[in-house]
Length: 125
Image (tube, rainbow, N blue to C red; front, side, top):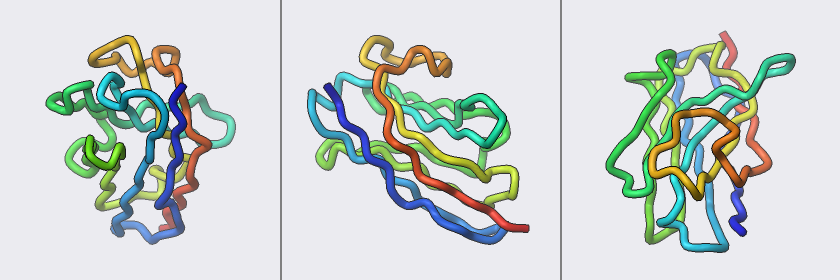
């Protein structure tokens, strides 16, 4: 069992930055690929960024490439998402997720076993 807790969301203006953090507890953190997803009302949960078991491989959805950076700290059992140059279309509830099976998941939400409760990010224009 892995428990995930997100923090760092808020209301910002377009062009600002935010750093989200996901704290993991429970089973061995190093055995999980981690990801951030986001969801807006009426839409399906969307993959944003993934980091592999090893932390050496990352992947991003096209709309955030060059602006967002995912990272993990094994000592602290955290996964962060640094979001720069935020746009109104980045608005949504951001979820942290853990995958216990795939070293580098494809980005499908079905691959992830554990989810946090989410943190709201609102970007105003």
